[in-house]
Image (spheres, helix red, strand yellow):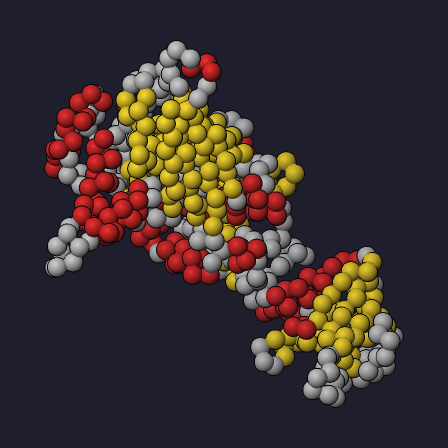
Length: 542
């Protein structure tokens, strides 16, 4: 420990630099040769101190908070500092500039790194060496500018709790697929440097270490970083090759480039919570030229569906507002707004794939080359051919991701009919359904627009095109649109509903009762848990 502290102290001292004024009217002469060091200043900041080697008194102290540094050459820097120097209250402060020369380029880089670390509070061991577990990163970043502070606070609080990490770990489809993808592709991890983006409990970092990783940097911004450190310490054979870094990937600095990025950045509909952007930023900042990403791409799958049970269930929620004498008050003026409000919630649950009206299509997001800005707004054209004649109640969506390993390619899917994950599937329900015949074309657009609450607004338009004679002339028979908030879904969280033939659904509408989900479980459940109303508890047809 004492040796480590001594090394850090030496990194903040530069015994032989040359100084010269650039300002037109310097406040005091500077020695040609001097020593430079960084020292604590009051209150709570740091200063850059220059001293004449022949004297113990400082020649000049510069407050880092009002100073900037610029590179002039490989071994020359320019330091610009704001000086008060004003005698009149209305007179603006002026700046002084000092050119600093170093003996070597490496010394110049070390000085610049130390300056930025102390000015912004960033841990940045660019000169090499491992980071200490739990290192705190506290710089302002792009994340802070595009995400609301209240949303970020709630987000990191949520993922800083072990019960939510347990919910994800107990998703054995998710965790097991990650484990298989890593262990089956040892050739990609063995002897390599790995960065775990949004490490959470650190489970993926431990998987990478099991696969023979040379070193793993587990980057986690929430208080879960402390739990990850404990978990890593409790597995010493693996933990000696894992460093937990507390901070956002947009802000942290790592001492070396990564050969592999591993992360679980997927949210509902793949993009919710906007962590994919952080994954892409981590790629640009940390991944070497020939590095791999686990996962490497994601696909959003979509298909129209018909589900009268669900439609009636949502519509019935607004019946409360049709009361004309609620303690003497007529609630009906708000019924229309309430009706639209319930249909603005995307539905998160598991459904029977036989409810799909046509084969699905998909939209690909390639994490290895996509730009962060491309995730701000995602436009997906829709085009389907109805397989049956029925009423279309909306658009069903799910996603999958690919682990493109050198030995084995693994897909993690959330598709209906596949083993249920904690992501379930998502359905956008139209307040005004469409009526289609078999063979009729369904077109439209799914548009996802990111917002500062770490989610997306969904704009969906679906149209049924002219069918039968004259269809080749084009034309639209019906169109229905809706706007939904991905951040505020209706967590139905049921297992697949009993399948009913389309012609029988209308006759059974009167049997449907709204299905309510307890608020205590709306944050997600074990994928094996079944939440069903009594009338829907019968076993699915095999």
